[in-house]
Image (cartoon, rainbow, N blue to C red):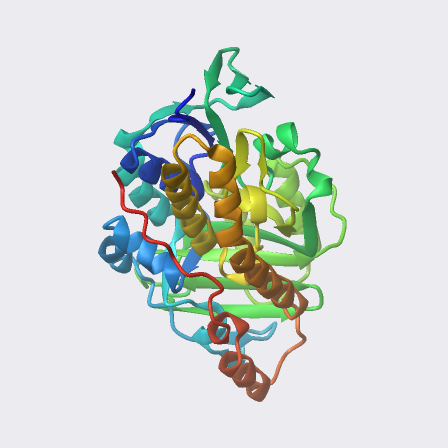
Length: 383
């Protein structure tokens, strides 16, 4: 009988790297395949709360991650002329700990790089499973067999599409598209940001170091936006067209966007599935249960999901079916809560010029801070 110790993880993001770390600790042999030629850098800042901090602590990463805390304070809401009309309290958008995603990924990879075999610049082309294993064919032409396959490959998961069905069956767009990129901190921001809102559009620029780099995010409301997900030029043209004629720093941001090396653009969406497992294939993180950036919980969810999945696989021994069921039973209420937060966040995202009183009320009653976490983090002692 197979011992289910040979596992392929698709995706070297937060979920995939965390899972590789914990599976190795539990005695599994791990291979990670990643479409990019290296671990991806760039992106926005990510928040941590509650149980996710315990996972980092158990990986001996809590203090290194704390050292990267942006310590972001309140942000100024500005009009087209750059005049401040309100202050956005940090409680609205920050967690207990906020760090640049690129730095988090760097730390996770440093912790996991010697714990797995990595296949960069490759992806899955086909997946066939039977009672005893999973046979995969890579885009490079190679083929291999594994005991289990884990899709940790994000919102547009290849594993999900190959195993469960087309993306449109599971991805629920929230009507918001976002572009994120870094740029010089020419406004001299220091642990703060600026936010500009116009009908159906919003832009913010924020930085933790006045002498260093800043990050910008441009958001637009669009229910159905057709574009090539791999064509950065087309994505930048869409942003430039939609934001043409806007005030504040928008013209400068559009100029900086075109030369940014870490430009990222995608829809804000949920992934809603009845089950995250099919035979010997299972999903973790955004691939199975994306809560959308508007939840502020996606990275924490990925860390916790990877930790729980690895622990349940170790606890169940050869019975992957039992492990997947226990993983889902533990995570499902947690995910449901986070996805509700994501939907609520999207609904209030483009509020028109809110008053200071409204902003203070939102901060005092932020769902992210007032709802108890629907999870008790198990203690899986590695062998």
